[in-house]
Amino acid sequence: MRFSNSRKNDEGGFEPLARGAATPGHRPHAHKNPRKIHQLCAQVRQVIDLCLAERWDHPLLERVSVVSVTPFPDASRLLILVSVEGDDPIDVQRLLATLRDLRPVLRQEISMEINRKRTPEIVFDLIPDPPPPSFPPAPSED
Image (cartoon, rainbow, N blue to C red; front, top):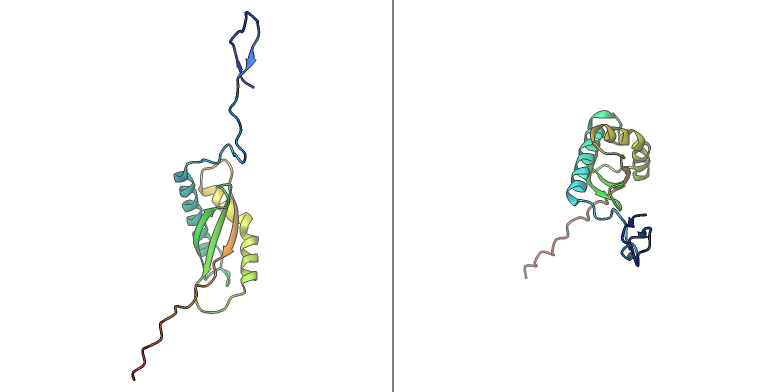
């Protein structure tokens, strides 16, 4: 607690400084620098892309690519969206389980490549396949 050294009516001692009213839902570090968060997400994306492409020779991981890395809900946890390339069907649950099992190793790789006090937690999710394009019906020739 901070104190002021003002004296009232020739009294001795110190009085606590008045604090501003706390706003509901206020988080002390909620307003981080967005440039730094963007930089962190880009660095994590690069590290994970390289690890998935070069480090493991796994049939499920060879078609996986990182689409985006976003704060989830802040920079202490990152959501990593991945996509699967190719037309062959893939077992989504097995892929997500494999990525979940690799989280400790990937966090270790991230911690070696970025300079932060704490390595963020990482969460994986698979983006759904985009719907096939719909074309307007061809005009009939009558």
